[in-house]
Length: 158
Image 1 (spheres, rainbow, N blue to C red):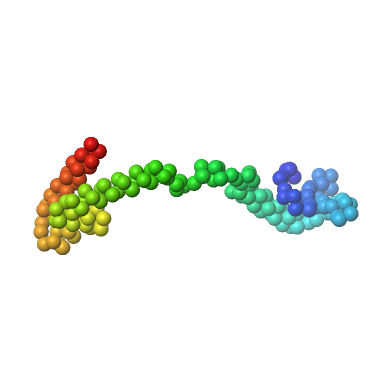
Image 2: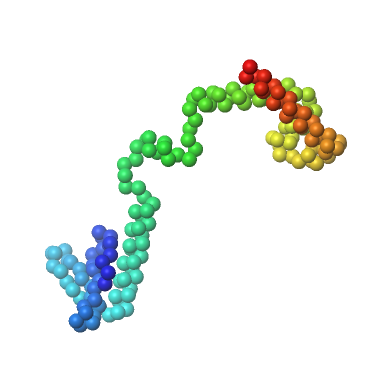
């Protein structure tokens, strides 16, 4: 019988007596008296199966549960969605305000088509159908709007 890691709550040990060719189970009672009892192969197999399942649970526990102290800094390091620094939040807000301002300064047709395409996730065909124009006209309007946005955005930094 191979030596196995067992749960501390497991009160018995399985064995095989080579001389007698019998299966045994060994346990200690509450008075610390050790008993060794012969058992049938079927009972041995049932105990063995239970012990293997118990060992499997122990391994899963050790694999998935941390036994270390957890500190705020270690939790922050493991976060999936890490919070942004206040400076980054402010920069992002300013950037978004600038983009909104630039989009709002576009001519009505370009602004409307750009918003439908990028924010409402409509296809060029859907926009053309809604506005009763060609797909090429919609694409042209959006391209011109993007050019204007990129030009204004580049000038914003200066």
